[in-house]
Image (cartoon, rainbow, N blue to C red; front, side, top):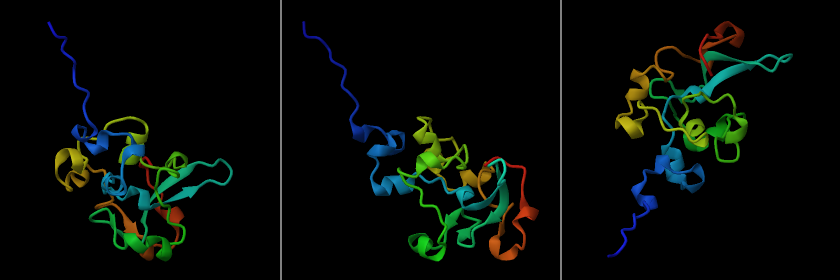
Length: 154
């Protein structure tokens, strides 16, 4: 009698968002973004303690309704201190939201149910209250960041 051998799942049978980040190509990496826009919000750092405080102030390039950069390809030229999120910088960005897909996957955790790759809709991140929609302001409309600290997690 022959022995049954369980077939090992191929890379293509596992959704790309469940694979290790090191295996993703550029398109898959970019597609992992959940479109919350929260990484594009200004944060204030206490010089004495190093603590970070979130604000409701968004980069001028952030489309706050859709949670996406309006000039993603040229953002680094237009906003010199824009942080480029990649495999090399990911480990040092402890201010990323706990729900960020990049953070979750780097920690070996699954995406949240509201992530569009799971739900099938770009609206679920907004419906779940995880995006910048409805509670943020543009940096172009703000004088003092200190006046815009919010009681929300990073």
